[in-house]
Image (cartoon, rainbow, N blue to C red; front, side, top):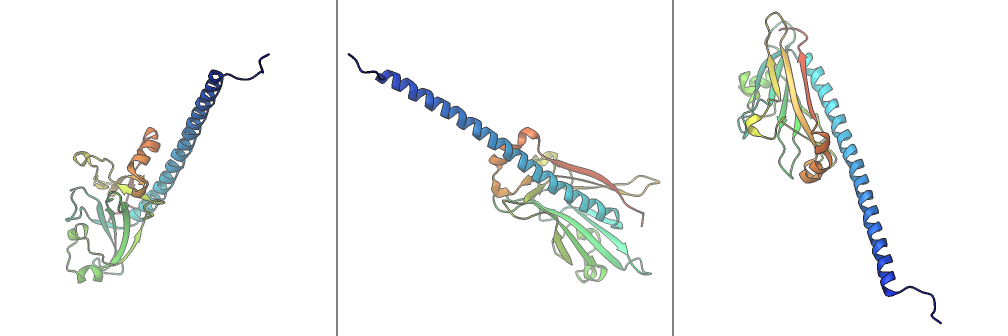
Amino acid sequence: MKKPGFTLIELIIVVSIIVLLGLIFTDILVQTLRGQNKVRILNQVKQNGQVVMEKLSTSIRQGGEVKCVGDLEDDSDTIDDTITMFKPSGYSPNQGTYIRFRLIRPVANTTNGYLTEEYFTDKEQSSQGFTDSQLCIKRVDLGFKSYLTDLDTIKGVSVDHYSTDEASFSPLFKKIEKKGYNDAITVTFRLFPGVKVGAGAYEADVKEGGIPVFTTTVQLRRSW
């Protein structure tokens, strides 16, 4: 009389089925986690972008006269990524406060791209001997500077131009003049997670939802 049990072939079949089910469940778990990570990254980038855009819009709207829109002369590109404005104070049109916004582009795996906001007076400007137009091409800091984005290469975000193809770069700042209306400034930029998150990880998680691009047009409060 034979004792009940499993043959070797039956055991192999059972083990194979268990392994197959394990692989299927593992894949489902990985896809679920990737989906959650994608949503988390997109939300982080969108929230940061909205905050930056609100700051830029408010400051530019009340910034005064546009003195220059230009590009750093030591950049490798030729895209307008700097704007300088001037608001007179007192009785002299030449005395007052400058505000300058500037994009410093990212360096892969090293530093995030970031936006700066800088305030300085007419005296600090004249001490360097710069003309108004040079304020948009000289990298020299002239006053109090703050960063509009988080520079952390993992937890922060990285700012760059709208297009990755230099031949089709959109300017970060563009001045619009229309007769009979106050000047307006169009701002366009895109955001990525910090550079040390890895381009591969970002593309894998986010590209299906579209790379976030932020753009707005701000009309100056008055002509100066």
